[in-house]
Amino acid sequence: MDYSNLTKADIVELLSIKDPIKRTALQKAAEETLFEKCGPGIYLRGLVEQSNICRCDCHYCGIRKSNKKSQRYELTEGDLLNVAQQCVDLGFASMVIQAGERHDAKFISFMEQALQRIKKETTSKQLPKGLGITISLGEHTKETYQRWFNAGAHRYLLRVETTNPDLFAKLHPPEQSFKARVQALRDLRDIGYQVGTGVMIGLPGQTVDDLANDILFFKKEDIDMIGMGPFIPHADTPMSDSDALPLQESLEQTLLMIGTTRLVLQDVNIAATTALEAIDPKGRDYALQFGANVMMPLLTPESVCGDYNLYPGKPKVQNKILVKPNVTGRHYAFDEWGDSQHALLKVME
Ligand code: SAH
Image (cartoon, rainbow, N blue to C red; front, side):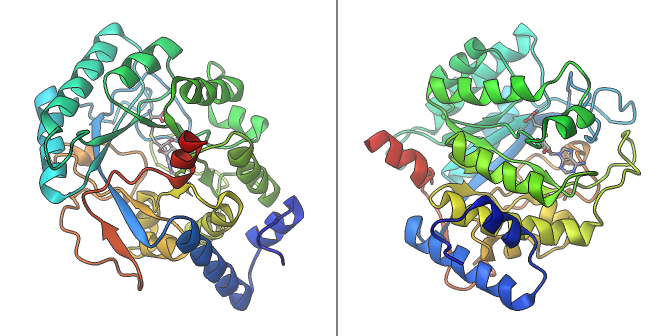
């Protein structure tokens, strides 16, 4: 197979690999592409989950608004500043702030001010542009995205979840649409954010053809960063006993997705996501071996991080101490923002 010029049929074939020899060949090719286009560094972002209060009711998600069992919490600006300082101290030059979706004016201003303060207080000789800040706060108006961008965030993560519109409709209540999600990604791009998206893998009814279309969508929309993970059914949601792929199969399918996405998109950042670790303690290491190059160690304070309960098995402890990655030939890229090469090359054009 000519890995440099993959057709949709090739992509489907790669995503359907069962033969261990072909699997190893994909892994090798993905690693080679990663080294050539991005290098061996693993970029670090300290992850803080600011709040699990959410106005959305996504059928798969443990923090959906109808889940009355979810204990709701909100971190203060001071809490976020503490995490920002921890990132600086640990040499994680970037931070991700994620939360449930809220559209009220109070939340939008809260986040704007917090972003401004984090930028201001982390700017130093060591970090002349402060921490790199990624936000993941759901769908908003273009005006809100602009305010947060002006306040200092420069990357945004918003998963499309699936690019099959019928499947999207099954996963979400009618007020959410695939079309609006795609528009949000384009609005973010227009404003100047580096844009990240991704999908869940192993969803009920999802096919390999859907997954191939997801990769082609990332390419067509000129996405800079990818975060994909296995779907893990949550007991307190309408999809608790859905016909999802068994977890081990979802894990394996995710690895094939990561490797294939690396080959097709080449110079983007791809995260080794936490949901992989919920299935297998080595899940994130495997992702790194298939061409992932971003790790997001959890820095949400331990008093609340168990409440950001998107899916079962999510780690409840902070993940501050990073020694060497368990993957040969790779190192953690401390003290670097670690923007995606794809985004940097666009700026230079
Ligand atoms: N409000 C933000 C953050 C949402 S949660 C936003 O809308 O982007 C972040 C991601 O967790 C979601 O995009 C979804 O892909 C993932 N997620 C939620 N429930 C999940 C589950 N049961 N299994 C696996 N991943 C899940």
